[in-house]
Structures are given as structure tokens and as C-alpha cells.
Length: 383
Image (cartoon, rainbow, N blue to C red):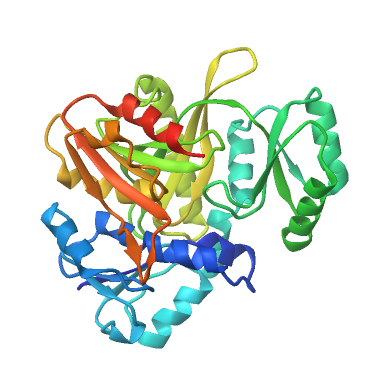
């Protein structure tokens, strides 16, 4: 049965607010991200492209080894005999599957919410004693002041995260005392969800995405580990998927500990009723004493992730190849040093509808050891 990939990439916004309506900018981003599904699609699969994409893009992608897919811009064009695969199982996409009669195998709404809630990851971190020193659950504005005053000297950086968020969204960064704008942001999230989560801003060394599939009838399965490119704001900028060693790969004990913790967390999420794709971000960082430490449950994403998709790109590599999948603003990934390398494959179009794209993504594959060099090139290009 063919699969129908549906990119509701604003999935967490739907979880956070039942009345959420995407802005024009987010609708545009969803449209430009649609072709990311090429990484895991097979010939004959369908991909939802809410705004039309020029056919030449798909022809070029096929020439570069990507699958031959069927883009659809009207849901009525999708046959009933497909397996529906959304980015994440929100109430909105469940209704679509029922309305159009597509094959759907989804966990309950409650299981999805629990699995993606930061309250769940906070509880798992607390149980395993993995929380960053000074991090805490905040349930009132007064507790925010207490957390900052009790933990940090004036000028120290911190981050506050909402219950649901992704890719550095639904969070605020601060330094020293909280401003009134910070407190207003916290008050709005407390009214909606009852809690936010306060963390110190630590010296990040490296980060990986641990990709797991949770089956209804078998133990959780490790699919692979993808190196994460993250800019100075902590925002996702790409994935290494073949031969791109991070500092964590160089410390197999820490990596194995992170994987074991991730699989244990997956088993817990399964006990809550969740099954399907799971990406858990693990961060290698330096503590205030200068020692390297691992945070194995930095983020838990009970949905598809770009790191998970990137594993599908390994089919384009040969023995000894290195591969990185870059994401960023259109025009920022054109560095001549990057383009001089062996193979560069565009995985997003230059135009969606009648307008130029703002988002860009490219695969870089090379038999030379370019990973660290390429990271520096691309991350220096981000604003």
C-alpha cells in the first residue's frame, strides 16, 4: 500500500492550543518543508504539497537518486487506499483521515499529549537524576524569580520552555533578572498549561538525535543516531546521517548510556499508550566545573523528526561517505566552499507557488572527511 505523507510541521502548536491558527509565515514554512519527506518516501508514495511546486524540482530529485513520488495539492486527489503518515498525530489530522477514509493506525490523543509533554520528560529526568543543576518546574511567576535569584549571579543566561515546543520555538532566553515581558510570557503559558520549565543555559559541546520506533507489539527499536547541527541560539540547522562523527561518537560510554536511557524512556512512553516514531535529543555539555557531562533526555519528540528523516538519506551513500543534511534560510546555504565538494543535492525547491522560497535544504555527501569544516561553514552563515 502506498503511503501518503502529510507535513503538519506545526504539530506542537496544535497540541499547545486547540484554537491555534497558523500565521501566513508558518503556512509558508509548512509548504516549503513538504519535500523533506523525499528522504524516506519510496517510488509511488504521495506527498502533500499544499502549494504547487514546479515539476522540474521532482524530476531533478529523481535524477539525483531520490524516489519518484506523487505530489498532491488537493486532498480529494488522494485515493482511499493509502496509509496515512502525518508528521505528528494531532486531532486535526485524525479528522482528515476519518473524513477521507485513509488507513490510520494512531495512538490515542491522550498518549500523544503525554509523550510530547515537557512535564513527562521533566519527570523522567528527575527519576534518572539527569536534570541540569538549577533547572526546575515553574508554576507561578514568583517561582521564576526565586529560581533565578537562588541559582545564578547577575548576568547569567537561562531559558524557559513551555510544555509543548519544537526547534527552539515556544521558549524565551534571558540573562539575569526576568523582565516584565518575560513574566507576561510565563503568565500566559501558566494560564494555558499550569507550568513552564526553567533551565540554565549551559556550554553545549555537541548534540545527537536518537531515533527510535515504538511498536505496539515489540520492544522499542533503535533505528540510528544522527548528529545534530545546532546554531548558537540552540535552533536546529541540520543533521549528519553518515560518517559524521560528533564528540559523543568519540565517547562511546556516554553515547551508550544516552541510548540506554532513551530506550528506557521509550518503554515508558509505550506504557502510556504511545507508539510510532520517536526522536530523543541527547546533549553533551560542560558543567561549571569544566567536566563533560551528558543530558540524555534533552528533548523528547513523539513524532517524526528531521533527524529521523535524515536516516533515509543513507541509501544515497557509498562505503566511506560522509553526509550532512543542511537546513536554513534560502540563500544562506550557497557558500562556495560548500558547493565545491563532491555531491550537493537540493531537497527543497527554489519556488513554491509563484513566490521564491525562504527556506532551503541541501544534502552534502562526500568521501572526504568534511563534516567539521562543513558545520563551521554553514553555522557561520546563519544570522
